[in-house]
Image 1 (tube, helix red, strand yellow):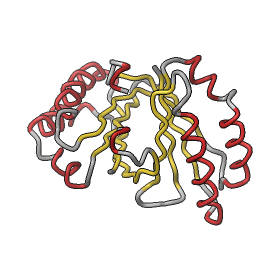
Image 2 (cartoon, rainbow over the protein chains, first blue to last red):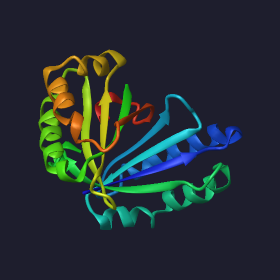
Image 3 (cartoon, each protein chain N blue to C red):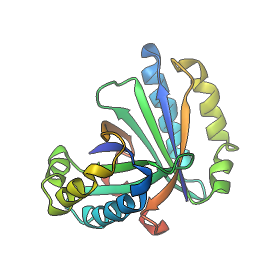
Image 4 (cartoon, rainbow over the protein chains, first blue to last red):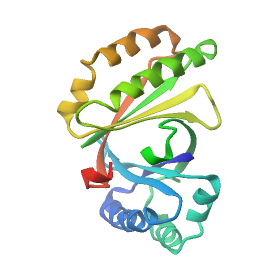
Length: 102
Length: 102
């Protein structure tokens, strides 16, 4: 299992657009085989700072996410709405070790 | 519902100690009323960078966590094992909105 945190800084005038497209991506991503979580969070102190918490059963499952139509539609839609390039950080999972807890 | 991300930079010689105490904290924290998640992650590129992903049903539930014996035991145990003070960042939840998905 692996988790990727994706940090996004959205342009003020495109926050609503970004959230709309990202929620569409969420709805499809959670249906992918091997997806464990796809949480969308908003910094409590800066609404233009968003965080995606993406957990997958395996590297393969995480890689397959980037081949899906919904990921590619999202990537293209949001490209010009970010104030700076988004940054992904990969994490290994210490707990919970039980895939059923994800 | 709220999420707190806690970023920790652990001293090299205390990584195992820190993980041991944090896993104990995890085991008790997930039993708290109002706890939704308490994930422990390790940066895939720097094992001394850890992240706690703590989700609670409410501000009250998150606040009550800091009154528990297991939180306080953890806080005291790890105090001298961190290379710098840990940093918590609060997030509001965009998705999933359904508490049952947490």
